[in-house]
Amino acid sequence: GVTSVIPGYAGGHLENPTYREICSKTTGHAEVIQVEYDPAVISYAELLEVFWTTHDPTTLNRQGNDVGPQYRSIILFHNDDQHRIALMSKQEVAVQIYNEPITTEIVPLETFYRAEDYHHDYYLRNSYQPYCSVVINPKLAKFRKRFADKIKTSIIDE
Image (cartoon, rainbow, N blue to C red):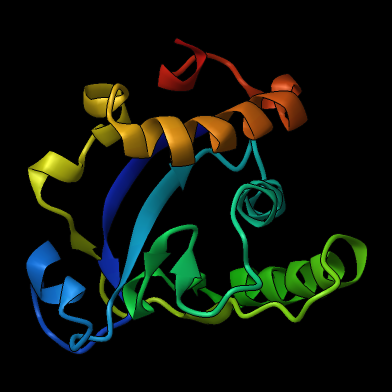
């Protein structure tokens, strides 16, 4: 049901930020992805389930070894239904999965800025890098195990 995943930046105050600028920790942006999907095939709630279970939403401004506000856990919603579903799912995972407070922000999307080209298909082009081996591969293995019934074909199957 997912038709595209586009890396980018959102949630900040600088127009058209670059990766270097958001890494300065002064723009307010988070590194994000824009997921386009067919709701007849996969629901927003199912996408959120993947989100909650493939990263750590309990650490403020951090994902693994990546530290800073640009690495915060954030859901950017497009409409009232997505807002409501995101809030409900956050409450559910807080009770069912995590014993720590969830730090994930749930805020309306104002503007999405597409990341520079070298961020696109990063894993596909850099799977041999230590970061991919240590950080991404375990997340992909967890995803494959937990969501095997939802996987069709993609780079994560290779």
